[in-house]
Length: 487
Figure (cartoon, one colour):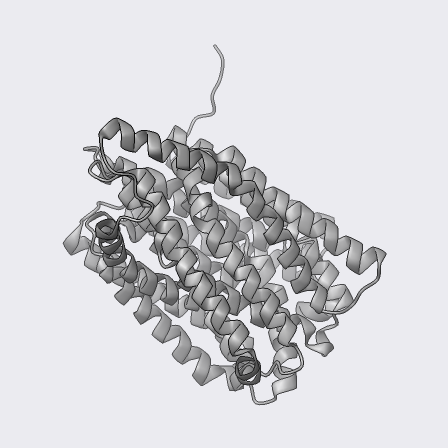
């Protein structure tokens, strides 16, 4: 638990601080790109496609790398190189297809006048895919400092260049949003050269010590890895569609195409505020995933998993209250013309909490090598989400997107728990966690009532902060948490 807390703190700080710094771009973009222009809608739309394509190109190899690298009978160095080759092959095919068929692709996406946007983002997602296993390698080697440093370097460089172009040089073209991302992503790639060199030497030394032949790709291993990873790919595609399908579907089915981009821009800007939950879940995943597989050999593993789940729920509910309580201040991240969509923020955050719980629940089928279950759960959730979006977006706009996420993640979460009880039972404290959820709902309405009272902003934040501290005090009493003291 101490190791998990330490690594989560490092990964979390890099993720949360990085995302916070990245928030500096949100007021910048919403200032230079007006809501009426639909430009931020284009940014939201293309980044949704990027997220989906990245999942396809990485092919579930991050989780597969951890699983096979921790198997005693496998050569971890060969697992690393084989993973890289798989992703490199898929990336090469992807880039060739995009550059060869850019005209029909741009036509389908209604970006005939902005082909350069698509080409630049294709290169960005290809580089991101190639970085996936090296970043996983740093986690496997328990090197969170370098991991966090590279993540932060990218963000700082990206922010610096954006400030240079949009503030100093006074650029207003959406083109530079994508162009600068490409420059920064390409720059970070060079920092993995030492890792590749070190791994190559270590692999040859390992093979020499164990009397085995050095292979960059072990085709027998490749087959086993693909068998394990393809259900994770389906699972990941369905999972990322739960996060991005609404942003891809929205401009295609909204009654007015031009207005659709405007509404999507408003939705995309407000979702940025809700992404604190995504940050927490991502930081938790980076630290927890390697530990889960390493812990799988211990006798107390199920008790450990149950304890982690409970504290994950407690902390995410705390973060939920913090965002809601400080909304009068956080809303200033985006320009006033985008704030009409702020009501969806609590809904999106609720969906993100469900996604985090589902991620915790997902380990049972990964540990018994039955990842196909995850594919079915995520597909079911994704089907629900897409159906709600398609049916209700024309009438309810982006509110349908927010509630679709709750329904989609909720479906996957419930299915995973129900089947997991039969296949890999873990004694989660369901009663305790539901109790915290009900308490959080009560605190939410109390906080919302203070905000709706339209008091002075300082007084509003002060009262809400007291309510949030009351939640923490209740947790401390219920969980019998004592502050350390000297004596």
